[in-house]
Structure formats: C-alpha cells, structure tokens
Image 1: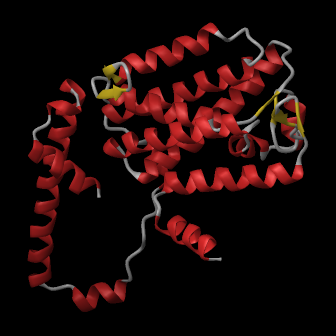
Image 2: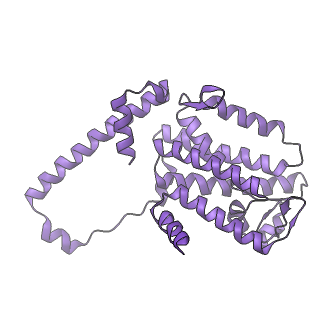
Length: 276
C-alpha cells in the first residue's frame, strides 16, 4: 500500500509529460491483462488500434486518439517513454504546458489522419499503435525552433539538435517501404506538425492559444477594489513581468543562434528559475 501511495503522490506532483508517462504505463499493464501476446506483440482490435481502413475509423473515430496510448510490446513502450522523458525536458525549455499538450495530441491526431489517407489512396491495410508520432512532433518542434541547441550524446559528444532531427527523418524516409510503413508515415506526419508549430511560433503565431481559457472577472469585485493605489501597483508588476520576459527572449534567441552551452552561468540559472 505504501508503494501505491508513493506512486499516487508522485503522479500528483509530476508535470504533464510525466503524467502521460504514467498513463501510458498503466494502459500497457491493462492491455497485458486483456489482450493476447502473439508473434512478440499484442493483438489489438480495430476498435482500439488505428486502422488504415477509413470505414473502420468512421465506425470507431476515437481510435484516432486511443492508438497513441497503445504499444505493441514492452520494448516499444520503453523506448517511446525514454524518448518522451528527455524530449519533454527540452520542450519545456522553450515552450509552455499548453503548447506541449497541443503539439502532443495534434501530432498524434494529424498522423492518424495521414495514415488513414495513405491506406485509402494506396490500398494499404494495417493497424498502428504507439506514441511515436506525438514524440516526433515535440522533438521536431524544438529542433526547428532552436536548431543550434547542442546535445551531448554518449560516445559521440556534442551535436546540434538539427543534426539529430535530420538523421531521424532520413531513417523514416529510407524505411517507408518496409513492413512498418504505417509507423514511419506516422513519424513523418508528426514531424510535419512539430515543424509547422515551430515556424508559426517564430512568426509570433501560437496555435495553442485557441485552447486558452479566459476567466470572466466578477463585475461586483471590480467595483469594490477598483481604486488608484491598486492601479499603480498593477502597473509596476506588469512592468516587472515585461522586463523579465525580455530577458528570457534574449536568452532563448542566444540559444537558438549559438546553443545552450554559450550561456553564462548567470543566464543558465536565470532561465532555470524562470522555467520553474
């Protein structure tokens, strides 16, 4: 019981990306109890996995979402979640939680649509599962927004993130005609979402803004507290926030041009504190 309580507490205190990792693991454990494991993978029905047959999707439209939480085998789950953990840390360096969720779910949904479209036009029949499309969308969005950001890889050293992104895309393109055609189509489609998101962000267009919720202020409350001293105080606070945001923007621009390692110790500490 203590173990379960610790897991619940950790889930409650974790960020959105870690919550998604917990959810994916839980779904996988449930699937292990409910579905047979044949030829080194789970046999999912077409009302959970995403079918390339558009008729199946019309009958089970929720599969455009559910397929992203299913995984064919333990190794498939492990690699996806490890990748998600590290990519989400990079993503939060530049973007917000709302943007994370937008790219994650839209990447999976768009990849699903492209997969079904491919099945229709090329007479391709198969099922796909996995969070890879969402993860690629997150990864490519960071690689596009800050291409010169440096990552240290074991046994290799430092590489700019755009080098790694090009390598992954090359692998998917090269393996399009293999037995996992659907999976590679999903990867590339998710990459398109990440690329478009980052390009629009550079132009000042945040597509996640459509999901923002504006709270209506109580008019009675306004009348009670509306006075000159509070107006002055709010003006000072807004000025402070704008100054802090300018500092963050300057640091992010420096990362985009010269990489994370070009930052001074003070800049790294400031960015870390702001991210928190």
